[in-house]
Amino acid sequence: MTAQASPRTIRIEAMRYNPETDKEPSWKSYDVPFRDDMSVLQGLQYIKDHLDGSLTFRWSCRMAICGSCGVMINGVPSLGCHTFLRDLGPGKVRVEPLTHFPIQRDLAIDQTDFLRKLESVKPWIINQTPKKPSDGANRQTPLQIDDYYQFSECINCLLCYAACPQYGLNPEFTGPAALTLLHRYNADSRDEGTAERMAVINGENGVWGCTLVSYCSEVCPKGVDPARAINQNKINSTNDY
Image: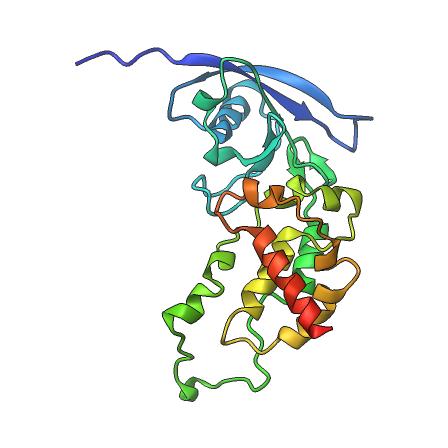
């Protein structure tokens, strides 16, 4: 049996900031042993388990499903569990919280603003006449599902907000993920709530606040394409006018 190769070492430079005690963020470097199958998230977990238990960051599923581990990795909005250390060496890896959001501590951001905007687009199926179980299944054709399925893949990781220059300039902009989920329900044949969402689409901070840089779609780990959803709703907004 061939002996397993010794792990290489990579330097992870993490932003550290506790708003209760620190005047401004600082950087701290850690040398982390890694193998080819090790993600940035696993590198952060190694730091917390073996080098510095005070490092704060979010994670849950480790499979690019929950969206919890979004951070800036070498300046790019990325999922920590979906980015591998083997692709980032041999130089240091700089990890910091997602841009455009307040920092709660270290790499963890305050998501309150996004959650408020998400609620404002009513991301659920609205029926003017509520259906009863006795009404049976609300069936859809494959083509009807195709109209919205891509946009339902959003995992609320907020990478698109960190990539969005308009959100950085205007924090009141509703933003890519919320507008995408708005479109997901408007495009659903079972939904009857389009009229209730038009105020968000047409508003000053709705779809017309987007300048179509499209970096949001480039960084999306699920291929949702928020820029396409927003562009389609510019057409819907024009028709509504």
